[in-house]
Length: 342
Length: 261
Image (cartoon, rainbow over all chains, first blue to last red):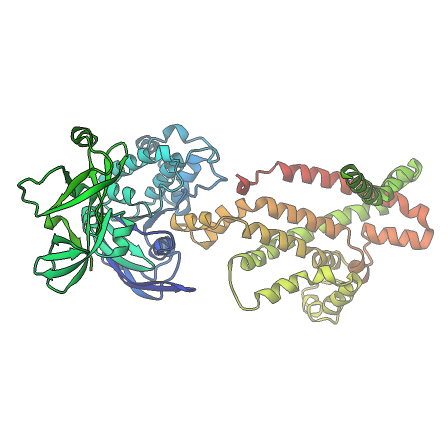
């Protein structure tokens, strides 16, 4: 287990403030550019000293250990393969530098598993982004680390090859039994790969949770926006369990006089062409503003005088209901699908 | 108008190139073969050229050993007085070399601080190869340090970070990553340093007139016997230096510059 306790660091005008989380599985640290993700990688790996706090790895306090004594493997953005060495020399480097026995057969077997066996005698100059990352990952694994840090490992990879590398990381992750911190700004990547997500914003931890929780139940406006929550709206409570947006009444978990910001995912809003008996309590009359076919789903923008919502439906539903712009429809959603922000 | 500007640039360029080439060509083409043959057969001339090249080589090697650590510290470490240190390193390039010779004589002379200290071990600098090497090193080490420093600074820090996270300590990273990645700059700096060393006259003529290096021999022959007797030595040193530099440049250009990839 890798534990980050009360970690703080000031660098110029930026600071990491009182960061706390622990990692036992594949955890993705998610945040926009400038949120402090790479700085966090640097301090956990030991490339930079912290002002206060502690880093505990398998019950050992490694806060003041030198980088090369931490037993934390680090995969940098584009792999950072040494350009003056060929692929095999790069792979042997961590063994050579720590005077460990070099078992060429073992390296070749692992290279085969990583899909890079055919590259072993190549120079590093003309490799693709994905190949470089696989080689760098194997090079890091050859240090036999107790924890692994992956710093934006998919950023330098051609978009068409990104998915393949994600699949590879997913396969690779299942074979690991060490804590992994994967840093990225890409929510889809985080959702696909992680067991847990730590959302970082401006040097602070905004939310920690399972990917589904972060996706469906963001705790702050920042997280909601970052995970591209489609529907965010403010509700004023007029009585227990009922509020208004403009003149539209809405059933939600709210007290009288309270003001809350609610979020709801587009796929939790059903579009109906008429009222029907349902366990969902919210039926709001609206008009279709726009319809966007996104390939795997159709986004329908609906509005009335008071609110604007986005619903995600299938193309089959769109065709079956023959929905058209400006058509009057009902937006249907359950009270429990709405989540209030803190 | 466009062509006029181009022609003007070509004309000015030709003047500049002629300014550099004509004096050298006048030596190369205007020195009688008989005089060159006599110079080649002269033990004094051959010895002075060998001494010049050898002393330049030793001064460059010592320069590498003590200059590279300085370049490393400047490139990678932050410390108080770093700016001052960089200015001090540039001093030999700025001061007249006869002044450098006087300064070195006052330190390495028999009554100087270091001269006195080394004399205990029987090492003298005035009028010895040691003095020649010290003089050469003083005026040439700046080129080596600055070229190495720029080489170190231009290495992408990700390689250094990767090396350390893979288990290398600072020394391991220096020898396995930093040195190979900046090798071309160090070689370029060494060539420049060696070139500067073998062309030095001012500092050495004060510190070690004897044994005579080629520049001192040229000066002595010119001042004692005149232009005719100094030209063959000049011819030989130019030809030998040109051959060596062309070979070194070819080798250095063929070295891979990994940072460009």
